[in-house]
Image (cartoon, rainbow, N blue to C red; front, side):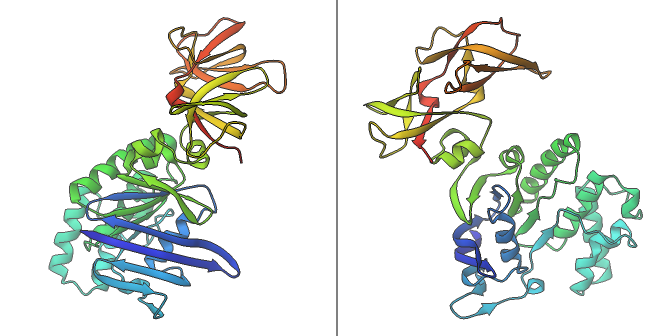
Length: 357
């Protein structure tokens, strides 16, 4: 069952187009993340679904109810869309107890006091906050406040939960713990959630599907595994993961692979569709795919070590010739390498080649 459908949505800020024909679906029990750089349109899309921004064309359907239709000028206000909203700032009422903060949406809907008490207590238990209902927001940690904001968004059983960077106010350690909790909660309750984030690790950890936005359009969408391992454009390849980037020219095409050559190096890789011999291209390879002094792989470069950094769980190496036109490559390893020339091996299937932008 489809809980949310967005069709060819356009939205402008003045004369500036922000969304340029976005279409997407959210299915029941699915977590979809809107990912992208600042200004890509991800938060605007979420706010348009919520009814906080007014599109200029397109259609939004929640369940079987049309809440926006640009062709008929139909627009249901935010309070009548019955969506759960969790904001980056949490937006908790400081003068209300935790119980009353979570109960507020139910009281607005004229739910009986007996049912309010029952439903709020059930949510508090699910959030691990059952003993904190009488406290106030300032008496809770950031992680606990974030759970209260989520509880307020789901206490009235909305068909879709909208989350706008819900973990960004937490420090790094708490954020890792919170995303595990959030994913588990969404799955256990069978929620349908649409979340905005700029953190790719967060998106990959929580999502069933990722929509990567670029300049107001969806650049690519798919499972976290598809987005990371099978990018279809240079933008997607570079946005996901930690990468090396090489510029060169295609000198040979052979089956599903192409040879890319620079000033004093060449590599084989997987080209995007339509590339031709002689074309200027950019090759991208994930840093973790580069192996140092691995003689089993024929596809390789030889570069001197420029520097190395110890990062606790691993070393990071930087390689570059003294020639300014030579590539700069990064790699990871478990030991500090010797200074001098190193063999950098990389599987041809992991070197993605795209038209140079």
